[in-house]
Image 1 (cartoon, rainbow, N blue to C red):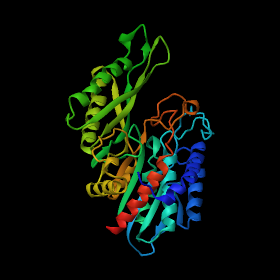
Image 2 (cartoon, rainbow, N blue to C red):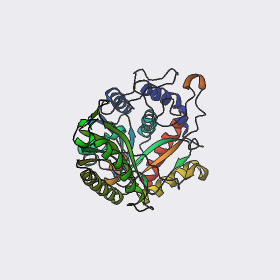
Image 3 (cartoon, rainbow, N blue to C red):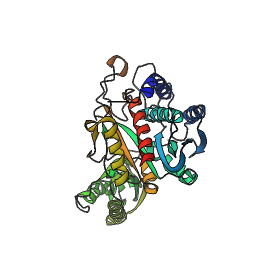
Length: 399
């Protein structure tokens, strides 16, 4: 795999940046240290730097010396997860209960590597907007927050691209999918109200736990009987809360969970069916029910033209064997989807390997999976991802 020599020579420097960010994880909209590091790095490279978009987001603007006829956006996410780290290497998290368990530290370092090279090689006709985004995790929608602060109005992009590392994919392999590539993410609560009473006198109460038990079964039919089987979707009930005492029938029971779909049409139908069940089923027992449905992230839908272009750049740079443009869709969610609703673009994946970069004596024995306490980004990807960003920019401005 051929990377840019100048970027390879900066590999150790990029690794140090990545590991520094890993050791100091910050949660959604709290990425003050990380955004300050990014902003200062971009200033040192001579970029025009803007801060405070989406609270802690950063945009670095680089204009080519041959003109500014087109513009492109490159995005990296910066936030960590509220989870413990079990790794034992020197750059492990220094903050209890926080961890870069999804590789955003690596995404940030790769994009900084590309900015460093392009800042020294500005012989192109166009504008590059380096977008460092907060709050991707947990439904916080940092992408939407940056857009609400005028991201694409202040920094217009003709196309926008993002990369996520993917454990389980061969190291350095690029994965692409046209159309729906990641699911929408939505959360819901159903509140069932009954009539509390003594457990010895159930006939004088309306037991919301019985209603909840029936509702668990009824909700399964939303996917198995009301949805087009060719339109994938998942409805998961992840919480049931009711009661505080052995001998008391409670007044209320609450069910919570998530829904994931690849199309908005499927989501509309699922929410409609859930609302009908939530409001009518409790009435059979003499109670009431209400659904609270929150649409967090829409489906991530890659644009045809931009995806084909991004895949071709990977082929020309790293060879046919390094590209898989038929990867299956992923039921995880990504707020890059908000960008793609506004601007043409593509979200692609870069293989993080099976964990061969990990040492048992330092990483522990857990699997190298996203959101796992023994995960660690593979630093071998840093020059690969940075090289890809550079080649993508150069090819886009040559089109």
